[in-house]
Image (cartoon, rainbow, N blue to C red; front, side, top):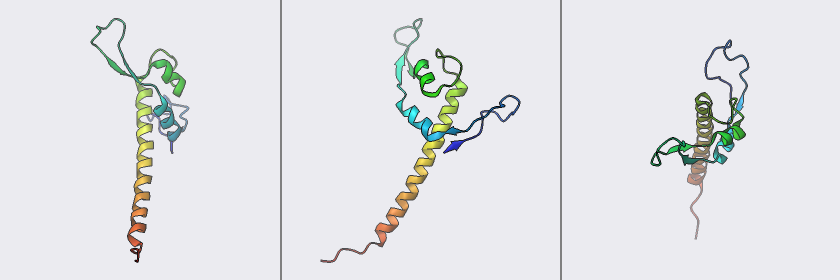
Length: 111
């Protein structure tokens, strides 16, 4: 599955839109470590959930820093992952329908 559409449809702002392999991205996302954490300046009871920016950068190579995750990139990864999952679910639903039809056509066993 390949996604071709940039976040904004403006060839002036987005001159080098490249295709993305949704299944490879989904594999990288599945392997991405996710944890709860807090910033040093926040009280102990405050927790956030997500990957570390360094792990994100290593997994996807997006953005220009390993200290923050750009929300445009996070949104893009989420959309591509959802599309890849939708594609997988659709294929599995079709396979299940075929298998059910084959099962329904089987003759009952004879004694």
